Structure formats: structure tokens, C-alpha cells
Image 1 (cartoon, rainbow, N blue to C red):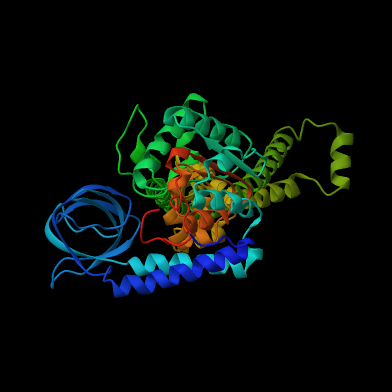
Image 2 (tube, rainbow, N blue to C red):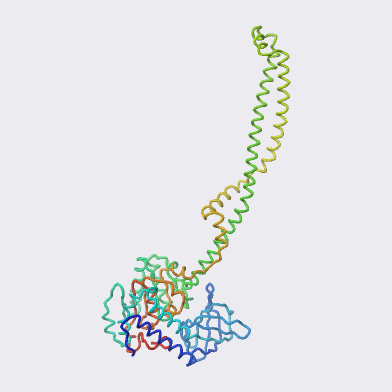
Amino acid sequence: MTAMPETLPDLLDQLAATLEGDAARSTEQGLDQSIPLQRGRLLQTVGNLHLYEFFLSAGMVVGADLSATLLLGEEAEPTEGIVLLQEGERLVLQLFDAIGEVVQSATLVPDVAGLTLTTSHRLAEMSKTGASYTLGPAERLLPVLEAGQSGDRASLEALIPTSVLTPFWQDDLTARRQKLTTLVIELIRGNKRILLVTPDHQTADAVTLLTARAMKAAGLTFKSWLSRYEVAIGKESGGIPLAELGFEAQMHQFYAKSRSDKAVLRKKYDRFRELTPILAYKAHKQKDLDEVRLLEWRLVTQLTDFQAKIKEIETTLTHYEQLPIWTRLSMQAVGKNVESLREYKLIYERHSAGLRKEIDIAKQRIDELIPEAAVPKELRPEFAELKEDVIRLGGTKKIRELLAAQENTNRQAFVQNRRVIVTTAARVAADPLFRKVRFDVLIADEAPRIRAAFLLAAAGLVHERIVLSGDLREVTAGCAWSLTDGVLTAG
């Protein structure tokens, strides 16, 4: 048993060096050699990931969470994936490419050295760039790891729960998980982001289902807040659709809706662009129509005035001889006599004739403009709604930018919006995504079965609290959290 270093950076450096040695030995021992597979079939497809089942020869062992290359023959392109589960001769792979419903045979090339070196680099990075990681809670694991190495159950049982390190040691799995899910609900209500890690994917599926049931019972939106990072191996249980809780399924659904929204936006934008010149033309014609109508009104007003003057002259001429002498004298004083009145009448009639021609021209133009300016009843509310949407979204320039932007499936941003992420500790150590995301609380379920390197890699991502859950009967000397076994052998 290797002595426990006094400080966490020293422990991280020691583990990193051990893992580098493991990587070299994996190459020497041929652990990365190809493994023949047969009787492959597609189990399910979720988004861009595909779950396949294969069978291998008796006695062959493939470690879980290993990245692997699958060779399908000389004419087919190889594909990459991750080993999720081995049950006897059955092997479950998560692949990035679909390879058909049925695969008669294939060859698996596991990357044992890759997982080991990736974990080594992560621990070395944590040791040297402590400012990028929160190592305070992780330092509380030193006495736990030391007790686990020596198999000192008494020391582990005597651990006093604190606000930073909380142990949930209990033999009864059901009772222990019940306490765990209750804690998860409390943390969610406290607006905490939780990283829940397990030693294997079967356990991760089981914990995901239990947590979803507890969240559902508590009235929480578990489909929005809970995410199983890998494609789930298990099926729906108790009305909980485990497949829908997968990170890839949630992200695929989100971006599918995003693409649908984008298609709707494009349709609205195209319709807005189609209606804009039409209604602009109609508005221009309406302006012309209003101007011609105003001109017509002025011409009619002038014609009415002339007609009133002509009628007045006709009345005067008809009754001229009957007018009092003083009235006729006063009219003559201002130049109004029978001859001049008749001249005025002719002048007014000529003006009226000209006005009538202009009015006829104006009416003809009005008749032409009315259909040109008319807007169908259904277009006005449609355009008004489209215009309101355009203004709300920031204008046509902003919409063009939204439509022109390439769809970027930002996994980091998406995972940061989940309240609870469930995965294996090995995936946290190996997946580059987890280098950039941080959490408030780490919950390690079945913690004694999680290797020290993986547990510390996960602990470096949290800045408030670590919760360890498990059965202390699994802790024996040199078993739990060994510092020498690395990731190649079980603890």
C-alpha cells in the first residue's frame, strides 16, 4: 500500500504518474489489441448517438467507459464509440455513427491507454492550475481515501458530516438511495447544480430513475432539470421515460425545436418581405388616391361656386326690369348692367366647362386608383402581426443575422442548464466537456467502488460540497480508492 501524500496536489501528481505508468504497461501487455465481435444489432438511436449490442468470445474482458474504434471491414469506414457495459459475453456500445440494424461481425479496438492518459492529464492539470479548479472540497477526501486504502471502516463510520463533506454510509441500499434522492430534492430547491457520479452505467440508470421519481413526486420538472449524460441502457420504469432523460435526447429535442422555430421564423420573414413591397405600393397608390380626391373636391367646390354665380346672374337678368330703380343704379355704379352680366355669365360658363373636364379626368383617375390602392381585408392584420414580430425580434437586420447564423450545438452551454447531471466518474475524468463545466455539489453513489483517480477528477469540479454514499462492507484493506491500481484493474 502506497503512503498517502500530505497534500492534495502531491496526491494528484502521484496519481498522474501512476496512470502514466499504467498507460505504458497497457501497451506492453497488449490491452489495446483488437477484439472480434459478432451478432451485432441496433438497440436504439437517440439524436446522433446509437446504442448497439454485440457478443464477444468467452473469457474476453473489455473495461467500461473505454473509447474504442469499431472496424467493419475493408470497404466500410470505421466508427468511434464508448464501451458502456459488459455482461458476460454481451457488450453494449454507444456509437457516433449508425452501422445498420444488424451487423454480422466487427472488430473492436479499445483505447485503454487513451482513457488512462486522459485521466492522468486531467489530474496533472488540476494539480498545476489550481486556480481553474476548486480543490477545497476535494482536500476533505484525503482522510477518506487513506482510511479506504487501509480498510479502516471505523474511521469512515466516525466521519462527522459537515457542510463540505457528508457521508451516507448504510448497508440497506433502498434506504440509502431514499436518503440520497431526498437530499437531491433539497439541493434542487436550494438552486444547486449537482454532479451525480456512479461507478458504472447500470447504477447510473438506476439512480436516474429513482431521482426522476422523487422529483416527479415533489412536483419538480424532472425532464427539464435531470439529465443522464450517456444513452441509457435501461428502459422506461414506473412511468418514467428513461430514454427521454438522456442528455443527447434532450439536446436533440431542443435543437430540433430550435430548427423548427427557425423554419417558422424564415417563413414569417419571407412572407414579411413578400408583403412589404406590396403594401408599400398600395400605400403609395392610396396617397395618390387621397391627393386626387382632394383635387376633385377643390374642383367641385369651385364648380359649385361658379354655378351659384351663374344662377344668381340668370335670376338677376330675369327680374332686371322689375328691380327698383335705386338697385339698378347701384349695380350700374359698380359696372353691373345687362350687357356686363351676360359677359360674366359667359365667362363663368367657360370656367365651369373647364372645371367639368378636369373633374371628369380626376374621377377617371380615381376609378383607376381605387383597385390599385385597395388592400385585401386579410392582408392588413397579417402584415400587422408580422411587423410586430419583426419589431419584437430587433428588426429585419437582426432576423437576417439569426437566419444566417450556423447552428452550433453548444454542449457546454446546454449541460450548464441542467440542474442534475448523472454519469459515471470515469466519463467525468475522460470527457473533455467536463473540463469546462463546474457544479455546486458532487454526489458519489456507491463511492467505495469508484477509483480514487476518477473520484478526485470529479471532486475538482465542485466548489461547495461533496456527498459520499455507499456500503462500508465493500471497504477492505487495499480495495477502496487504491492509489496503485490506477484505472486498469478494479479496486
